[in-house]
Amino acid sequence: MHGEAKATTGSGGLGSLPSSRLTKILQEKAELLKRQRQTAEQAYHQALEQAKLLETLGIPVPEAAERDAALQALVRKTDWEAVETQAKSFLDYLTKAAQAGFDGRRQELAELAERMSQYAVPLPADFSKALADAVAPTSGADWTPPLTALAGLLTILQAAENTFSQSLRARAQALAEWGGESAENLPGLDSRLRAALEPLREGHVPQALEQLGAVLTQELPKVVAKREGIRSEGAALLAAARDLGLPNDALERALRADAEASPVDWKSSASEVATAGAQVGEALRSRVASTLESLSATLESIREYGVDPTEALARLGELQGSVPTAAPGEVPRLLDTARAVTEEPVVGIVVFDPVTGAAFSADFSDIFVTVAASADGAGRTLSARLTLPTTPPRGMHAALMVDLDQIALLAF
Image: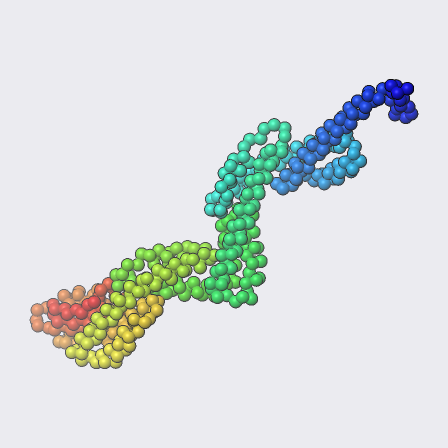
């Protein structure tokens, strides 16, 4: 008959049921199986997510691989009830692992973040929020949110470390090229730089920079030589500027900054020294030209005392001709040479008493004392010739004649 249900018999049969009832039972069973599968898969995926987060954070979960393999086998068999049971057991195991290692790892990353901030490692705008989320107190039984927050902080710190390391290596390569290092030396340099920068992974920036500096100074001799040459020239310009009373603050600051700079920053710091030195050198050029004219006048003035300065004047003339075209760093050396040339005709300071025939040497500070002590009012005449040292008191360089209390001084 058309309106009667067919009986279901045999193993697993449901007996004689109407078709509508049978359909409903099958649907309910399918829904139950679906929910069971969803619950099992959710537990399984949650366990896998936590296991991955713990692995990322470096929190040990030694049984994770074995448990995961067992769960995959159950999934292939579609034994969802067993999958759910094993997944929940896996989660319990991971929760215990998280509880054991989370606080220690969170403290380590918080300290790493503090070190990177302290040493000005560039960090993204969302760093502060990520740090706050990661160090917030944990609450609830689900460890996924705090693990996710801590892993997010780790990702930011690792990215910052990589970016900073790349920046330092790029600056080191640019430094090598600036110094004129051979191209053959550059390919192997990067591997040595990477090894030197390993401490950055733990936020040990000073140690990394110290090791980086050691590699650069050992492996890049041309860079070291170029920087030392610039510093030497800058120091000479600074001394000459001080001697002649010229402004030199910018050069002094640049030399100080370069002395304190890490080797990876030498390209920038040494270039600042060169720029400031060139400015001082141009100011020196005009002053030295005037000084050399005064030195020529000084040499001319000693003719009357029986000294022939012709050869010295010729040499001084050559130096005067070199001043307009000399490089800034050469100007102080021209001045030093001119002073030496001017001093050569004069033997130093020799004070003598023509009456007694006594003679002795005296430095510039003693000459006035000597004059005062020897003037006895008896008509004695004291004579002296003086040229100051290569770096005399500012504004003083002369041939000096002493006749009792009278001092004739040619100064510039």
